[in-house]
Amino acid sequence: MTAHPADIHQVEELASRLAALEERVSTLEHPHAAIDTAALQPLPTPAAAVAVAGANSIPVPAPQWTSILSLLGATLLGVAGAYALRALSGSAIVPRGVIAALDGIYAAAWLIAAARAASRPLAATLYAVTSTLIAVPMLWEMTIRFHAMSPSVAAVILIVYTGLATVLALRTPHSAVFATAYAGAAFTAVALSVATHFMAPFAAILLAMLAVCDFTRRGSTVPALRVLIALLADFSIWTLIFIYRLAPDMRADYPAMSIAAAIAFPALLFGMQCALIFIDVIRPAQPITIFPALQAMIAFAITLCALIWLLPGVAGLVIGILSLVLSAGCYTLSYGRFRRNEQRRNFRMFAIWAAALWLGGLFVLAPESVLSAVAGISGLAAIVLAGRMRALTIELQGVLFFTVGAFASGALLYVYNALAGVMPEFPQWPVSIVILCALLACSMPGGSSADPAVQQVLRFIPGLFASFGLAAIVVRCLNGLLTLILTPGAFHIALLRTLTLCVFSMALAWGGARLGRIQLLRVAYCALALATAKLLFEDLRHGHLEFMAASIFLVALTLIIVPRLAHARPRLLN
Image (tube, rainbow, N blue to C red; front, side, top):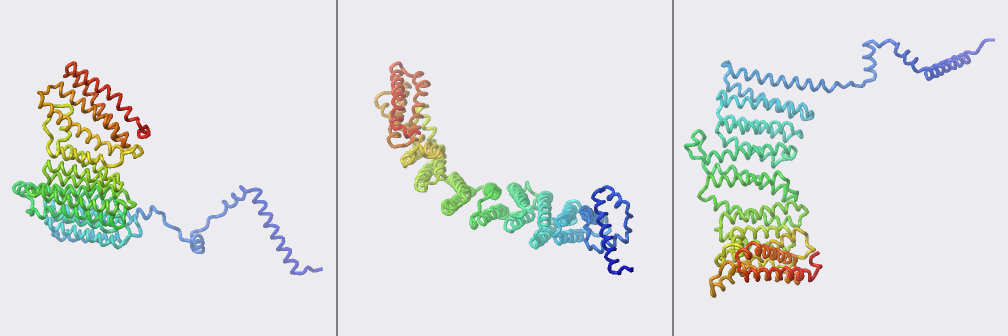
């Protein structure tokens, strides 16, 4: 009987499946044997490997270190070309002017290559570094060593190089070209300005570079470069005005420069910083950062040095007017715009600048007596405004103005002499105005123990000065009346002072408890402490027995009464 062909095919297919199943079971039971069997298989030939790779069509990436080595090789080739040009410049084969032109073109080519490689940050950085290493030594050697080009030509080449870097940087998002080229050009400008004594063009280049960093988006992308350019510009301009303040015979090897041109550099620097702050802070209401604020103050200080050194005759008038104008502007911005703004840092910074500029302008313009009177009136006005506006910053300024007025008028020295030293004459009008302003400031409402600690301190200082200033005037008036009767001795004056301090201490304690003024209570204790110290160091040393007994009686009575008056309303002392 013959088997059917279809049945034979089914049997063979079933046998092959059984064989495959047995092979899988054997692999699971003996895994190491399967691995060894695979290891004994012959390696594919190179042609087969290429065929398999082509069939899979999966690209194999080159190692990263290979591309890094290629970039380093290209960079070294660029440096080698620069050394070849430098070797030619040292010989007489080719004119050095031609070599300088070729070197400049060569550096520009590498800079363009760096911009075109912006998608590869490492390549762009290395190419930009190569361009700087080519351009900087060329300018130095051609200008300083070989004298093949004048400082003016070197400045023009540096302008072209930085201009190319600026244009390329504005067209590419990568900052390596901009940062590397600008850093190298900035250091080169400073070095050439010092070495060639040709300072004005290189200072102008640094100002232009600083303007690019400040007023374009490139300055914000590379903040460290912005700081570097600003500091180098500060150094270059300060050096310029420091040199040109000397007599012409002491700077004979420097080019002539007018006073207006020399002052224009710090004025432009300061104007740029003011404009930058206005753009960055005023319009978008962003918080002012540390370095722009510091740079503005540095630029202002350099401008003041330029005015003092180069315009000694009218420097005081110009500085005083400039300070007062800037103070008015800062006050307008701080209390007009920034006070209701969320950026409190801007408000505080501009308020501090306004107060400092106001006092600086007064010191420069006003005589000492007028300065003290205006400072006292300014302190009173500031405290009045602080009470209405509820602004702690302006109250702090008021205390500062009072302090300056007290020192400038000699009121502090007058109070000391009247209460503990040699009895002075009747106070002059500046002293009287400062004390009167302090008294009016103390009459303003406020001073509860619920106020913040800083505010309590600020209200305590005018109260202390007003109380002791008034006590000093009272002592001087009583001493004047006493001289109509007899010639007062040391023991008379000691008892007079003790009596005045004790009466003031009790009056302040009573008034502070009645009016709810915590600062008056504290001043009362200060007066009591001064009376006690004066009893030990003056009354017991200079007094007669009856005057000593009277002083001891007054101080003892005050020690008993003042705490009771102060604690009449205990809630005020919490």
